[in-house]
Figure 1 (tube, helix red, strand yellow):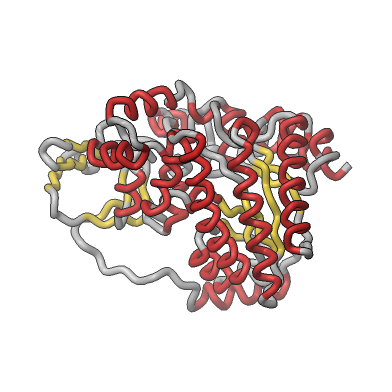
Figure 2 (cartoon, helix red, strand yellow):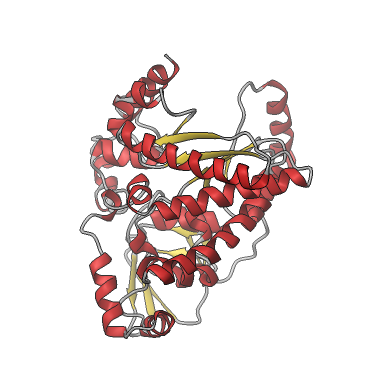
Amino acid sequence: PDDIEGMYSSQGILTARGGMTSHAAVVARGWGRPCICGCTALAVDEAKGELTLTMEDGSKKVYKEGDYISLNGATGEVLDGEQLVSPPAITGNLATFMEWVDDVRDIDVLANADPPADAKEARKNGANGIGLCRSEHMFFDPDRIKQVRQLILGNKEQSDAALKELIVFQREDYEGIFEAMDGVPTTVRLLDPPLHEFLPSLEDEDVLSSLAEQLGTTVEKLKEQVKSAEEVNPMLGLRGCRLGITRPEIIEMQTRAIIEAALNCIDRGVDAKPDIMVPLVGRVEEFRHQNELIRKVASGVFEERGKSCDFRVGTMIEIPRAALTAHKIAEEAEFFSFGSNDLTQMTFGYSRDDVGSFMQTYLDNDILQDDPFVTIDTEGVGQLITNTVEAGRS
């Protein structure tokens, strides 16, 4: 998502590259935006303000700025013109079937939910908690991303000031989520994506000019800072727990926001059940570092408030090395979750953002029977998951 403001303002998102597990698609789903990534029939001419779609029969249709298309994010269909839509709902036979399921199931279904509104919707639809609350999605709001950019690009004083503003947003969001999930667990993943994803495009002069004024610098100097923050392979770069280790003040802010929000909710009679997840751990030492920091901050909040609450600290298994050394990590972590997208990406060596360029050919030639980003690869990735579960429980 290189154009966060554009994505946030959009009613729907259609891209020529990527796939259903691309980061842009994940962010879009978190915002409730219908999204189709990897539409190879799409060609965009920014200069003319046109897009061209190649139809199944080889013919082409050109759409100009102001024309309507409709997206079905569930099926991947791009439809001509403006279609009638309604909010999704569990009704009819599906509602009846899900009631039957509730009577016989022996596992809980937890939701992916980020803003409080998503948490309320998940609870309404029967979720027994939140298995993944991606805290970074709360930062993409245009009103907040200015402070995130100040945190990344500002001097020490400016970064500290940004953290003080961000903790207010974070605490309010977590309170709303805990209220919606009253009595059931909420797992909050600490900041995961590379920091450059929050930075403005070098071509967006208006945003750069505004940010330069905010930071008291020039556009030219700001561009140099943005360039220096770019990484050759950002998904394997400074993200996840690596970010938390190199910028511990971010983790301190997030932990304080989570624990303070939980205590505030408990004061109001809400049964808040927070869990904190450390992302992208590959070595037990990484988890140990972050766990100690989290518990130190939590202890400080408990001392300040004169009260405490229960919480767990765990990790997401998404790096093959973590799966292979799960027996060590399990001695320190209180729970495991699985990040199947990253685990699949790193096990196969396929970039989930570029896999669309060859996936259909692999399927057509029976090299793969299923897209591993759609259906878990039970033979390879599944073996790592099985190893992790057995090692963790032992």
